[in-house]
Image: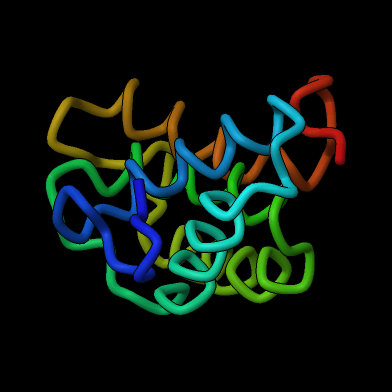
Length: 124
């Protein structure tokens, strides 16, 4: 959540800010100040490294939020994400992560799923 001064109220959390933007977008609150500020926070931090142990979770929600808030920003972010994931992918197609290969692989693939728009939530 981002306050009206444009700073995160709960520390710098791309995951929380992404979830907030996504909820506001789905809830048809794109005209709110909270949405504008949260969207700006995400765009301003689009190149921030995902360093926390929740990076896979953050990557997934960042994909969703950017897709809903700013398509051009999502395209830039998505291109970088594809490159990053290609470099991290194991030979058998899986990904490694703190919570094991099944979770890491699932979250990585879900972050890329917007490219195919299979689920209704992936529509703009």
